[in-house]
Amino acid sequence: MKSGRFRRVVGLSVFVAVSGTCAAIPAWHIMRSGATIEQAKLAIHRGDLERAAELLDRLTRHKGGDAEAHLLAAQVAAQRKDLKASLEHLDAIPEGDPLRPAALLRQGQCLREMEYGRKAEEAWRLAVRLEPQTSAARWELLELYYLEYRLHDAQTLAWEVYDGEHDKIPALLVMLRFELARPAPHFAVETVEDDVLVAYAEKKLRDKKVDLVVANRAADSFGASTNRATFVGEDAATALSVMSKIDLADHILDRVRDLSQKRGILPC
Image (cartoon, rainbow, N blue to C red; front, side, top):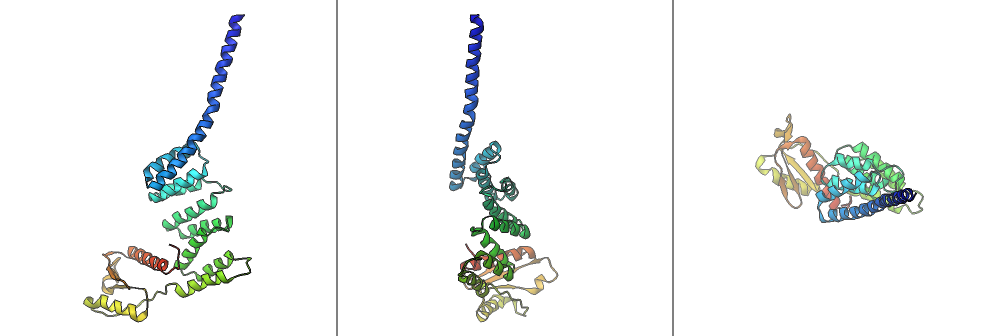
């Protein structure tokens, strides 16, 4: 009889001990997860992206639904130029989550960098609908419309931003800045000797009162897949090496973006 009671008591003690251990695991895991996020943020702040990725990978594997961890992991992946991984983390943030608008903002930025302009636009527009007060997504859209010369879309968006307000002056100022300051590209083919090409481009820069002249030899580009050009600006002339025409177009767009940011048309 005593032996049976002893076995029951021992069995109860073991059950309580095991149950206590099991109950402690989730609490310990939560504490450990919170610390991991803070450690990842610190690693990102220090520029240690490899360490941050390691910590966040561990966290997202253990807590698949942690939106903050996925958002941070997407940021780190994008900084490491792994845009596919970044998009995977952003897609893991479900609809209805408070961080979903922020995820859509970053999703659009990744898609834009991957040259999926229409998909990027869809992501930013959805971010604006979900969180109308967010300004970052609106600026991304305005930049996209500006670079694509979609002035009507930019005007419509500006009016949407200030919809319902009696004071429409801010919207008008946005449109005025786009109308007056946006680049107006021109194209011309002229006969110039090679040794005076840059000097002639500098004269054109002054005469036309433009910010940039892209000078190149037409004979080198017609019928070819490559091109070579010289950027002539107010400060200096920069000669580029021979490259594909697509790469040269990217260089030109990058320079236009830089000029637009310096003039305050686009956010830095």
